[in-house]
Length: 86
Image 1: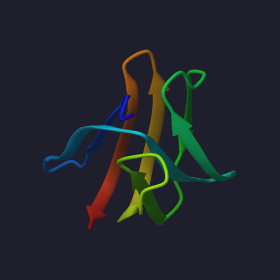
Image 2: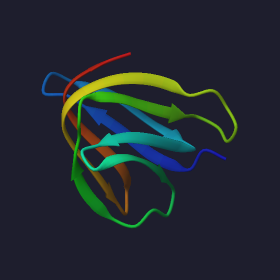
Image 3: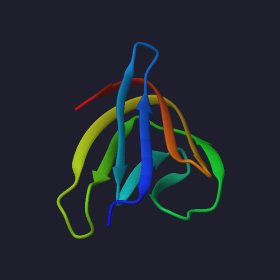
Image 4: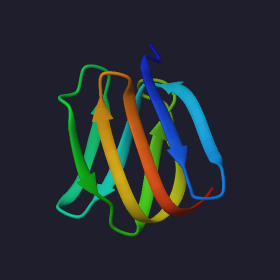
């Protein structure tokens, strides 16, 4: 069930706003997965790839990101990246 609200934003535009199952994020202290109900926190991103899982067990969509921050809160996951490309 897709139940995590995910937004990916760059300085130029809103790249993606969607309901997904899980997102794996390249944090500076290591990659981490975010699903609905994840504890709130904020971290800095390292250059790498987001893996967006639309459904449980599905194949991930990969989006390359560089720089920025990720914030997990009550409204879901927001990734503020310096750049992003699918």
